[in-house]
Length: 475
Image 1 (tube, rainbow, N blue to C red):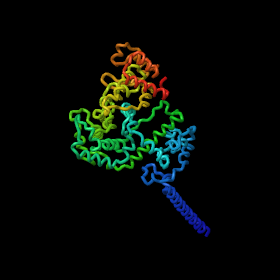
Image 2 (cartoon, rainbow, N blue to C red; image 1 turned 135 degrees about the horizontal axis):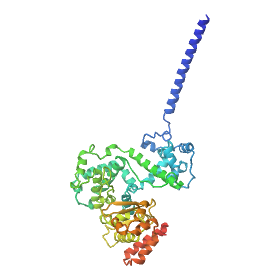
Image 3 (cartoon, rainbow, N blue to C red; image 1 turned 90 degrees about the vertical axis):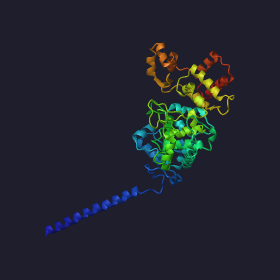
Image 4 (spheres, rainbow, N blue to C red; image 1 turned 135 degrees about the vertical axis):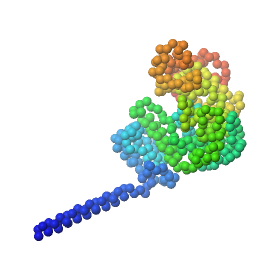
């Protein structure tokens, strides 16, 4: 009897244990489902793996600031707050709540798309990026500085290329269907700019390159001590990171049928490839040829395009040569311009040549169609501030850009002058690299020793001095 009672109790205990296990499993499943369920707030429940839709971006509920501050608490790091102008990207996106860029990037699960889920942050970033020329962010220094130094009447901006990508494709198709627009060889006809949609040709090529190609590689501000940034430097790196994220998120919204490939548009792609010079050794892709056609038809931004300087050309290395077909041909093809776009220390011989070049380009005595306006702030800053990375760029006899470091120059100082002649480097250039002269010293030397009489050149020098003084980089 006792054995039967014990047996019954044992069966009851086993049943109770199984029931408890099943009940616990049900509770776990219910909790898991509730946690996985999407919140009614589309911003705070942002799925980072998916781009924001237009509906999500039109929402008015801002992201909870704790999502940002929780990362600061998690890392245990914070920077002193900075004063940002109201409405700026830094203020709208809450940069003072961001953790240090280096620590967050490499030591936590922070995602820089989180701040952009806020309508306020997204809108401020859109306003900011819309004014930027995407080619100002080129990684190739010479290409980037060309766009920075020349002022265009109709600037190329992100707003321009993102405004109507589908319409630009239709306009490209229209231009490629008309024989008068299909210029090749040395042909140019700037009067066809509007009727042959020169602007759309460049827009479409850049949308494909930035959004539908292998990815957008933008330049970032370089700091030697990346893990020891000042608060201002740290916030700038965050801003550059969010700029990249914003562009990528805009790209994700685009229709993939915009891709100008041989698979999607076989006849049009084949036609554009036929523009290629059959004798050229380095073949160009369809996007590069579209940019050149845009320059032939008069788009000024396309007419500033230079081929990327690489030792070994490769696919996607940006080989377009629009500068050969626009109104900037004479300027951009000159050796002096190439010297200007390199980063060097202030030097009297180089400044003297540059001043004459700028005077000729800006002169009102030439055809007004060829007169060129420059961004003097960018020019002065570039020319007066010595290389911060202690690397000097120089053009060799065969046109190749050589880069010399401090260690290289220490070796060159031991060489005889005749040995340096092969490099076209004067001994004083090497000495100036270690103890660079100020812009004021260089301009004073030019005024005292060169005997300049030309009113246009003197006007250029005076303008240069005035801007340098205003920017605080003259002495």
